[in-house]
Image (cartoon, rainbow, N blue to C red):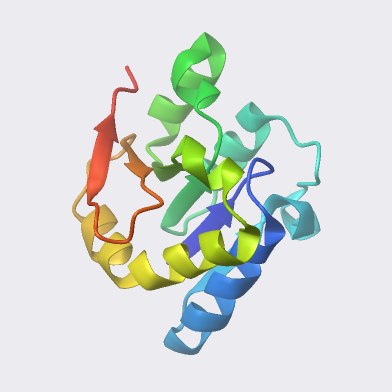
Length: 140
């Protein structure tokens, strides 16, 4: 399993999660550090969505960008790609980065189990509250 963090998230999240999951044979990357995929800090959403879909790996996306669900072109690309995502709740933008990273690490085992059962193309809001579940978000 591979985890992709887009440019609406801190690279700290990807680095922290990668340190946790790499010994288990998984990996996490931030878009800024994915030159081998042709990605950079300014890669448009449609391009990374299409690029991840073309890769044969199982990707989980973590984003802070609610617009993917609302922009017609991005939403269509998302549905075609069949990716699965956690969308960070707005509270992540007001919370110190170390606390946000700790929530992601805390919730990771539950996130991993949950997302493997989710339908392709689905998105779920990831609350900043450690005890809250995952709220389904409408995509189509």
